[in-house]
Image 1 (tube, one colour):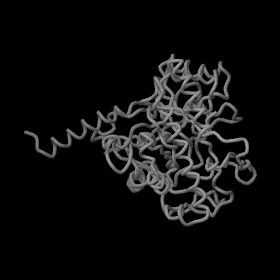
Image 2 (cartoon, rainbow, N blue to C red):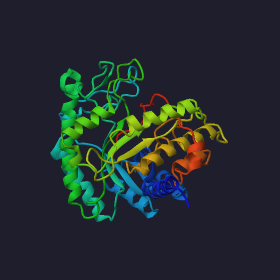
Image 3 (cartoon, helix red, strand yellow):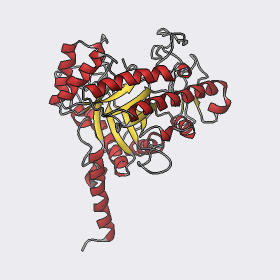
Image 4 (cartoon, rainbow, N blue to C red):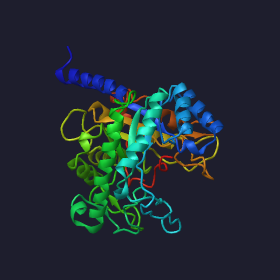
Length: 402
């Protein structure tokens, strides 16, 4: 007769496997509306052949965007839709300054987002989705609003730090960013109301903007004073002002470094950081104190573009990360993972180091990244799959939805 501990261990493994199967696994497709219809169809064919069923991307709010969504749906592919806010023509614009801040994009401060214009924009889109029989996998409002790259509320240069929850109430820069966060919640409320009255998408999950997983008290990743608000502070502030009544999950972006895969000490540090920072806000659905997380971007860059692909190191890193995801899924703290990315930006003059479709096929690491999140909690997986650690590569993310 088996012992009680052994029986409990087997039960936990079984539950973990079931919960891992519930996690939505997808991949980011970068700016598909910048590609020709022919090139879009090539990528959709690649995704279908690889058995991808969910992609995260933006689409244009017109016939071209709806047509893309219909062609994706015809191949069994649903869209986790990245969507932004709308602004008046008089809203100020932070210009793009590539010489000084090449990864800090132009745009409007979040505090100038217009709820009524946004509502009208969303209504047009959801009416078109309903009329064309398109059900989304999810709706994510905004992208990395807790740092300077995607939220022009941040000044450039900033104060050269990761702002805390206290800074959002007492620091001059922090108080201005907080105004933008409060306006973001008004935009989310408008989006939720439109979603709630949709015929086909009223139950489609609403996800808060994917946040950079910056910890409290850590130094910035460079000396350019490209400020951030820590992940714990950003989520805590939004929750204190009503986020949980508006969304079904929290968007998180995690880009661990690629250092020292296989090192046991690094594995332990990596696991601790992932669980304490990246997963910090994540809670099971229906539980007080938070929402499940949707990791809408994760990945590891590989700058070796030679063919045939040399993919062993990245494959190991993806294996390691999936173990962490499996543990989070077993606790019902994780609802979705979307690898970044399948392709390179169609306007890019060079391949993207993040891409997993190379040399005419999906890399081995890519096949693993888009595979169902099952069997990662087996005892042998714990024994053989190391976890990596490092400063997050936060200068990541697809361009604003088009």
